[in-house]
Image 1 (tube, rainbow, N blue to C red):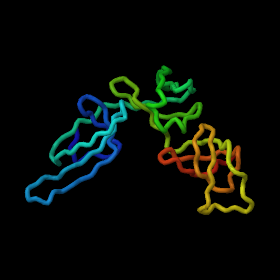
Image 2 (cartoon, helix red, strand yellow):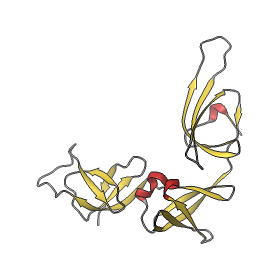
Image 3 (cartoon, one colour):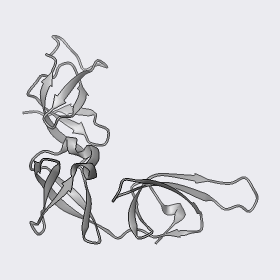
Length: 189
């Protein structure tokens, strides 16, 4: 258990026996004398994806979900299911595309990441901050182009599109930030 004022974004709370990830926290001090601090929390269910907003008084306590993180490796995709292997015991498990959400655009064979377990059940996987992906289609490089504010779309090997500098060509490998889908840098061969 933690105090409501200690809740921060990314925490996983146990609400009504289910795991909920904190997506936003705001503190509010009412103007009335003697009123206590209010903590407004927005959460997302790790099982259903549903959103929930709750308000706690500053002196309340909140249950933290007993979650475990394990190192896993992405093996392959089969239709809309993604197969992973737990690196500690080599057991394989699958997650559906709707469970993974936007994360599917960053998964490549052999990618190492972490799984989030709640009561022995794998809920989701956490991606590394950056991943390396190959550009499979983009406009030709512009002669004399510098890395300025001009960007062009590029389709990557997993099917997602990102904006890249004009000097990049098809076949190059780039680093992409998994938090917001931004181009980070060209990978040196």
